[in-house]
Image (cartoon, rainbow over all chains, first blue to last red):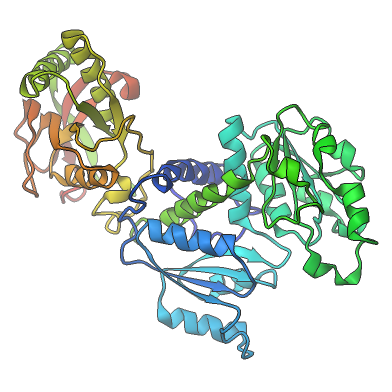
Length: 308
Length: 192
């Protein structure tokens, strides 16, 4: 496969293994550009990219902006503060305004699941989902897959343990679908209150005890405890969460020797992950970040690189 | 994009032995022109320039007894026809083992045609450093240049018409070693 025959990247649930393989291969080729003295190729000169972030973001937003810049595309963005979302504009009106500005591609993050899908259906521009509600975060899923593949060579047959707040995590869903489709075995573990009902239907296995999930894992993906969403008390206290589900050196040792440790960031150090392992030799947390730029460059190229 | 024409083989213009001899001669010419191999780097252009560059490196090593650095260049991201094409060419990556600043970079490609690939390759190289000079090896020069670009070392000059396609086959990629001229039949005869 040498072409991505789709207009939008909305999620990994609907993506085939061949498509993911092509994206990861292309991203691997893009990775080298990030380390060059001149980090820019003329590929997407004259293309317009609009980013609509209706929810806060540091990494993802910067990563998309840099990806656009490295490929010579023009990128402008709207963040939640100071946009008309604050003024109560409906998504439908936003969509119509985007349409007439004519960008070739729109990157959207939105607190409601399905918002980028609605946008994609209603504009001619390509749309990339940069995270929609608790649904999907496909570019994060892809960069996690790329980061692991760089270490292991393949995703086939790996045991991937995803630990933490699955309920609020769009990263978890994209990882489950992505790794699963590439032939990994995905196991999740979380307090029952942070597990969505019927999560097994996404193709993962649930282990209520974190120790069982970690046993012999090749990859441990620790999710951020979304403290800003914990107002409804999903668990008694942060300290108890740390005691039962926090990943420290002792728990990480249950995984295979040299298992890969990931975290999509931003980290709550001392809550879901301890500092010694986050900064330790098994952690690839900082390698995930440039891989994120490479994945987004690959997607921009694959969606915009050819003529119509 | 599926082509709306068929390709029919018209003639073989180089066989395995002729390709081998041409590469040996070019290896000698490269060494002669550069008075040795000091500061020389070979860079093959994806795809078939890559195995040709590797072979050239082996020949030069045989002649001079020194190993010379050999890299590969992907020019996809520098193409000037990306928005004209319907497909999105595969990006295969660039790897050059040393810094090219101040070095003599010898670009290696299989067929020199419009010159646009070489233009893109030179732009790509300039983003990686400032070589003291760039020279060009083409196994086949088929004419029809659209840019002021010429090869320093040519395996064989082959006059062609625009309706023809020159195919270089190398064992590592195609399982055969030869250069053939193919003729387009049917469909439209516009330039590809």
